Image (cartoon, rainbow, N blue to C red; front, side, top):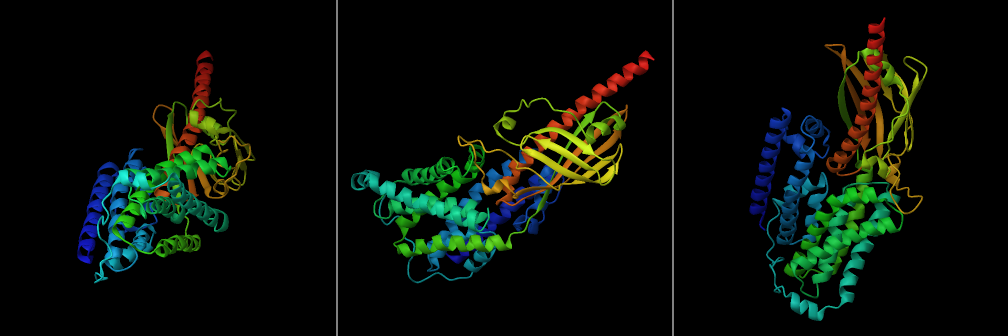
Length: 452
């Protein structure tokens, strides 16, 4: 792909994607998505807009973005080959910030006189491949892919303490690409086999995390919607590069070595962004009654929701020591207690607090008794919280609960879909309990007055 086509198609699709997303966000949230917010890797402003829309909006935009990621990667791989460099260099388009610089540079680098990309120089022939390739060949391709995934996990998580784009974007794509490339380098397999091996590599990677007690079932299940399409994309890329080029294997090894370097840079450059989740209920009780059940409430009934029974932190009760600013509220969950020093005390109107201590967000669902992946400790951090009580007509109250938090896992646009959903469900459980208690008390007070 030449530089003119790369620039025209690439920036044309970017403009189209921006126009559709900006229009969708404007219609559904009445907010305006500015161009620099669209290209920024810091997505806090966009997430604030999405929070004002329907719950499915974030997921819809995530699915909508996947074809554009595929197009960007495949175009960049072909453009890198056309420019006379390694096609593996095109994978830099997935690295935040670096990708913008890479795309601009590739728009100006001229085509090389030496042809680097010849589509399908060897016709795909699955029957011939099946006859000449052994099961050991397939196992070898899969083993190389899994070994690379394991190395990246150790470097990113246990050495650099980073859950960045190198781990969640680069690793599954390269695992699939390594498998697809190794499968097709000496034998010609079909696209189905290449995609299947890419999918199998990331799936077995998830199984290995469970077997070696490095992760729990819920976390692996949440990662699969991200890893599966990326593994498939990698399998296709690996086959395409093996079919269309005869580049030395050392270029693939260089690409594999670059990813840990990107992970290292990410761990130093990453900045946390604060997000907020707001949930509200309307209660048939006056604010002064609701207030007493906000500052502390008795035991909640056992949860009926299936997700709280899988190990996700579930609120149980709350108590407060002291009154006014400086008092300490303890909100007890199944995983431990949140310690919340009070910062704003406005009876009947607002209660705000910081979070001084917090437990793990979940117990991992696993056949093993002790599974403690690093991301359970300090990567999802609640910073502040508040309750606002708004008096309504008819002696009623609108109760709003807010949580401000940070989540140091990339891509935040994906992982915060899960965290927002779970924090919202925690809010709902607490607010509905406060609603039930307050309405019962208000009804009892009304009956007492009637009897008097």
